[in-house]
Each structure stands twice: as C-alpha cells, then as structure tokens.
Image (tube, rainbow, N blue to C red; front, side, top):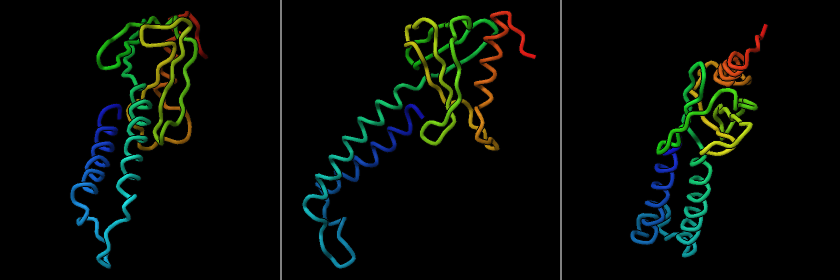
Length: 149
C-alpha cells in the first residue's frame, strides 16, 4: 500500500493526462468530437492534487514487527527498536477502506510519536479492531507485568 498504490494511481493518471496533451484524437467522443480544451488542464490539476495527497497520506505508513520486549518499526529506509514499555495506546481503525493499527508512544521515537501500519488483511473480519492491535496490547501488558484475565 505504501509504495505500489500511489505509484500505480499516479502513473495511470499521468499517462492519461499526457495522452490528452499529446494524442487528443484518442479521446474523441462517439460522435467524433474532441474533448473540451479545458479537460487536459483539469486532468493535470487532478493528477497533481491527488499525487500530493496520496504521497503525503501513504508515506506515513510504517512496517511493524513485534517480539516479547520490543516493536521493530521501519519506514523501509530506517528501522528503530521501541521498547514495549514506551507504548501508550494501541487503536485499531479503518483507514482508506482497510483495517489499520495506530500505536502512540509515551515519548517520541526517531520515526515520530505515533505510527500507523496496515496489518495482514483479514478476509473474514468484522467491524471490530484487527487482532494485531490486541496482540500488541497483550504484549505491552505482559512487558509491564500486568495480567489480563
């Protein structure tokens, strides 16, 4: 999601926009009319606006792994190790139609004071929080010496 969705979407719209400028005849209507002159500028504007939006939104996603003592968080360029005791809150939510998990920290890490990731897709999931959120909450409780009964 972090890389491929924006690349495919932006690339597709950029190609369509370029074709409006270079090959306008390919966009003829069924009645033979060319598209309105402003259509190419509308496509260019939409492509630029959506490209900025998608890059800003999707660049926030991180990759997260968990062991008994820490979270390993990566932005695909840098990986940081965050002790479970630094986790303040874990929430599961829907993000752009997919289940996501956001982790907030007591103190900021090199990658920020919170991270969001999209765990493995649940095909038979319901509207409840993703099991990955509960797994992290349980690991935090175990690290803090709290038992959940």
